[in-house]
Every structure is written in C-alpha cells, then in structure tokens.
Image (cartoon, rainbow, N blue to C red):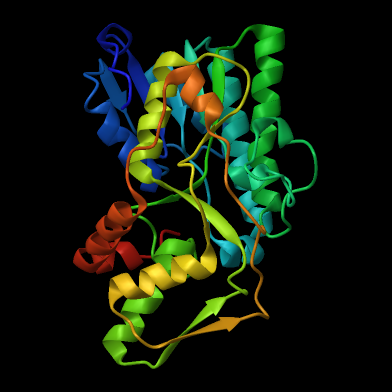
Length: 325
C-alpha cells in the first residue's frame, strides 16, 4: 500500500509534465488528478519542440513551473532501436539536456527525470542494482537510447554538485498497460505479442512468428504503478542517486508468449525466428531503494494488468495501432 499523499506538498504546486500525452504521461496525469495539485500543465510537442533550446526556454517562461516531471522521449522496441538509433540518441539527448538546464537556469524548485533500464550494461547481474549502471556497455540494440538517457543522470548529478539543483532520476522497468503503442514499428514486447496473437486468431492463421529464442527474460511494471512511483518520488525523494522502479517479477519471454496466446485464445503454433535478436539477456531490477526512500511498492498483479491491457486494445484498435510518428 502506497503512503498517503501529502496535500501540503501538492496544493500550491504548478506542475509541468513533458510528454504528458504519451503512454506513461497520461498515467502520470491520472495520478496527479488524485493529488489536488495547484495546477498541472502538459503541453504537446506541437506546442514546444523540446529538441529546440529556444522552444524549451519559451515553455518555461510561459508556464513558470515549480515542479517539472520530464517524461518526453522517443522510444520503441528492438526493431525501432535498430532502425533509427541516431534519431533515438539525438532526440532524447537534446530533450533531456535542455529541460534540465533550463530548470537549473530558472531555479525551478524540483525536476523529476525519467531514465530507462536500457542504460544498464548488457550483462548486469540480476536483479539490477543501481550501483551496476557503470559496470559495462548497454545491450547493442538499446545502447544509443540508453546512453542518451544515462547522460541526463550525469548532468543531473553534476548540476546538483555545482549548483545545488534539486533533481531526481527514476528508472522504470519494462512498462505495459492500457493506452500502450501497438503499431509494429514502435511497439514493445507485450503489445507486439498481443497484436500478433489477436491478428492470428481473427485471420485463422495456424502460427505466429516471434523474434528471438524465447530465452531472454523481462520484468514488467504496470503503467499505473509506474505513475504512482513517479508521483511518490516527486513528493518524497530528493536524493542524487538513481532509483529503479520495478515489480519484483522476472519472466522468461517464452513463458510470456504462452500466457498471452492463452489469454487471447490463439491455439496455433508459436515459431521462434532465431535470426532475430533477443535483446538484453535478462532484465529484473532490485526495487529496494524505491521502497526504502519513498515507500513505493507495485500493486497490480501481472495477470490482472495483462487482461486490462488486452481489453483496452480490443476496445480501441484504431487508437492503439496508430503510428505515433
């Protein structure tokens, strides 16, 4: 059970949420709506292009936030990471750099930066401890994105040391849930598998093709739980150390596929395309620091979260499959 919100913290806050129209962003806005926040502003990329320093400065000047939650990012699954590594590196690097520095220049009271577990080394001991971040190079298909996001931790810690900037850095594990992206060009593993299984069932196909060997593992965090962790950290944490957000459950991809095809009701064959990469061999995080520093414990059972995700997809196919860029 999460700690009770502190109304005194939120009641006078003017909160800027970048990326508030995205998958995680909308969940964060939902959580903020339960906090009785003074005001919340969530501009779109059409309002301000965060890759443009002048646009970031204009955003801060217009909104005058005292709390920033920086969620804006360009993301995708293994396919997107392999197809557009340069875009994912540069876009994420510029957005984070400019938002953090503008918050510093304007002496914004607090900034929350969302990192990624794609920044961890390829062969990180499991469960991933935050102390392992610098012990190797990220998995190759994730590296440009992961390094761009990790650079924001370096900037944040340098700013804290030199200027006393109040900024924190959170790393959610693999997210899933309603309102995720199901377009094949950008989808992560759970929406990609749900779409494959649903399409195969509806078309009467006798098999689905799945990338890799199935031997890799992942830890999945329901998006509403991740949003609660972010809001709790904004309220209760002000340290310079990065913090994992996780659910304490590691699941092999082969088992995940079995769960999803059963849930969808597809009874055909699963064929593993071993010419395609598995991505990072294992992913599961140590969430002790989040529990100890600000009381975050994920509360959504995986089976329940997966059912909610499938139900949303079936009811919102056009929105779910729309290409986001």
